[in-house]
Structure formats: C-alpha cells, structure tokens
Length: 181
Image (cartoon, rainbow, N blue to C red; front, side):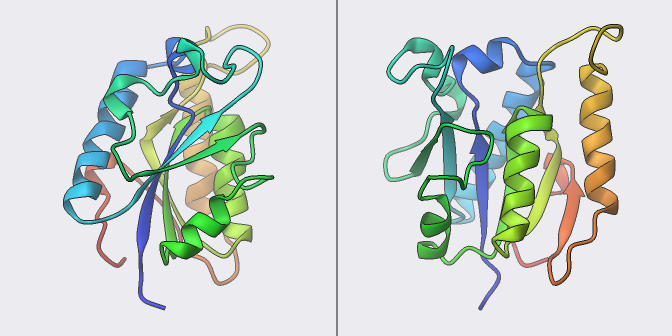
C-alpha cells in the first residue's frame, strides 16, 4: 500500500482551547499544518469530543474558528479519550487509504496520547507534532507536572517508543513533510 498521510486535529474546541497552555501558538501550528496538508491533497480529519463541558451543539463544543473543518473534510465524534473507541475513525482512515496519522490537538496526556497509541495498535504509522499538541494550562507546582513538562515528557516518550512494524516520529510542525517518509 502506498504511503498516505492524514492530519488528525483532536479536540481543538472552544472550551478546551480556552484552558490550554500556549493555546495561540498551538492553534497557529496546527492551522499552518492544515493549510500545507490541504495544499498537498492530504486529508484532514477533525476529532470532536462530546461530554461534560463540551455538550454537543454548544459554543464550547464547537471547533475553534481557525481550525474549523472545511466542506468535505471528515469530522469524527467521540465520547472518550480514545478517538477510535466506538467511532468510525478507523473506517474513515481506511476509506481514505491512510497509512500514517499526523497527530495534533488537546490534551497531550489524555486524548492525544491515547489516540496516538491506538493508531499504532490499528497499524498506522504515527507522527506526533511536537509543537502541535497541548494540555491544560497549569502551574509548575501542584498535583500535576507543569504543562510544559507534560508536553516535553510525551514528546520524549514517543521519540523512544518502539512498536513492531510501525514508524513513530516526533517532528515540529515546520519539519512535517506530507510526502512519504
């Protein structure tokens, strides 16, 4: 099967982005990737979460304007951190002939990580966009590690992850090339 990439934009919704660390920078990185993907004829699949605080149809549930799916672009609706669980994401990717997912979005340690790992289990190669995922904005001290450290931690894990038969890369948005690796 020839190499075919798709850009996954996970949960970049108004309520979630309003909580995000470096929200403007992350949205800008993903928006730039969207434009490059579209110019290269690479499909963009938007993942949209529904749940507490992001109830379907509300303003908070809507995708941020800069990343709003264009007519004809695929949108997958989910209710868990796993974008594959009880959704048509796998079928959508197979119908598009996808072999590699370029993963971006919110939140690093939940939906982004879970979806990227599930993509590997579903036999897709993965590119984690180092500056294209984010998490809740939180202080250095407290119950959780800082947002910046969480993002760096996950980028580091994916740089060293090994998954038989799969390619895993961590690239900055500027390094992503939608041609074959």
